[in-house]
Length: 292
Image (cartoon, rainbow, N blue to C red; front, side):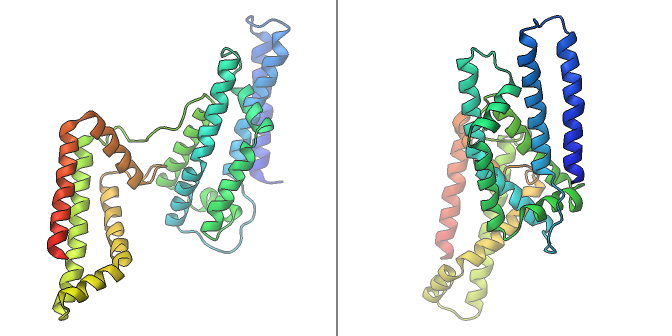
């Protein structure tokens, strides 16, 4: 039996004992109420242990290796795939709360969701899809999280963010459009400006290289069209440096998504921000037109 499973069982036993004692000796529950609340407390504890086991399995992996970048990409893809699961759990939870006049606690909601809905199967389906995409396995991925990158701050932050969203869904809270507090309108504009500059510079350098080799404009246009994917790959690599500079590359949401969320947020609230974004886009298109 795995160490993590034993740890999960220990968590269950300790918390059940503490919770039962707390409920039995509190003066706020009648004798008829106690069995219901004890059962709910057990369900909540089992739910937490189930999450611990799902995200920290220590089964022996194969000999393949996942890089830090692979693990981060897998986590973010899992977050994206599980978004609909978060929404479904939040909807289930909200419906249960409203129908019970908010008398059913979070532990009982977890019990209902895990035992009487298709949510566990949806989670497994989402995980399998992502593991298949990266040609890896559940065991290999979880071993990387637990034993190889267990002290990696970026990976820990991503997992923490995913866990918070997962737990909030049982409170009926829908996943929101995540934007870190420090990533304000000014920071968003500065990042976008640097991103546009990087894009123009990379494209300009490539076109200049083709021109120096004696290519005519029509040939260059075809070369650009045929090599666009590779150019965009280099631009994306350069943008990763910018994302780290602005400290948005460490969260459960991909940095590109955070930027999109920030643009929508500040465009809605700030007309000058929206005008500045539109100006940047016009300037970028104008410069691109002079290059190609």
